[in-house]
Image 1 (cartoon, rainbow, N blue to C red):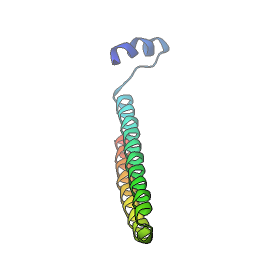
Image 2: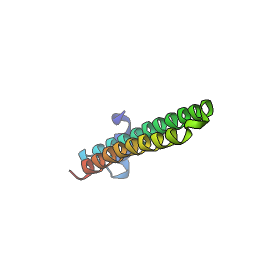
Image 3: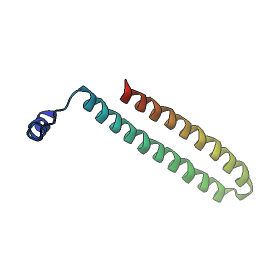
Length: 90
């Protein structure tokens, strides 16, 4: 795939070097991280709403457990994004 892009970039005077490949891979990784986090939190919230609809009296405990789990998921996502950003500058 890179062989197809190189002639186009060579015509414009820009060539892909190692930094460009690292930057593209980092952007791809951040995109995958964001998609995974979105799916995880969406599934978490959907299951929490379903649980509250089945047992409304346990709603407070379910919401607090959901918020704790969502914050842990986002913490891991921020850590992964920071690792990708650090890879840009190495």
